[in-house]
Length: 300
Image 1 (cartoon, rainbow, N blue to C red):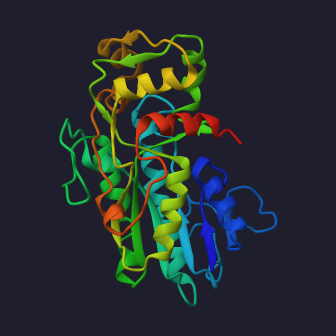
Image 2 (image 1 turned 90 degrees about the horizontal axis):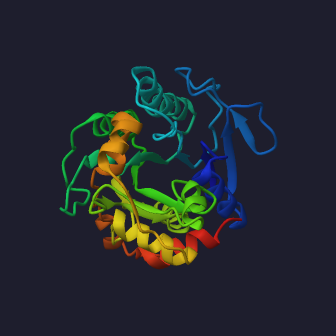
């Protein structure tokens, strides 16, 4: 099986590529810089991805993980355009490149996010829940719609509605480690808001699972089965690092510092992986305490 992967140097893409390599798969990494061995240069800003019509000939599956970081800065109008282009435009370019192949890849696992659901409060939701409201929910809706031409052409498309990926290698968790180690860990706001999370290990394993399960199409939540409140995450981090975490950051301070991005920290996302579990997937880290300890230990 030959598998092309975008964002192959990112947190998830690197771990997935390494796992596929170890399993003896033929991995083609799509990169923006000049390509090296086992790589293919592309330009997601171009309508055709900067790829020749034959570029993806012989590729069986594509895993598309590209997207500018959501929390890397305030959501100014310029930043919002960048967030949309890095997801929606890149997906459209990749789909066009796939369909230009003499025999298009049979499978597309396309990045998405639990932001689809908006703020769910204390209500647990699965893949049957409707699209929420707000910038992020609209972004994710349009992101998934960019895969429709591939579906129409007969490609099996799975939209990976990922939660927050926990890993000591990067993502949300890594910048929290130093303040927690210094005893400055704090819950955000009331701490009752839910976080839909998944460890990097389970995310990679679930992606592999979806590559191999031809009966699964459409949206699939890549989240652990037990979402955690912000207070529970705070306690888990403090326990794993053997430090106190008695502080609280008031909601008003978060809103003032981050603007609209604060909705990601103060909003509640209680999303469960109904389709993965129904298909028989088993999570290695289903609950937040052991998950955080395992994620911190995994820094390789």
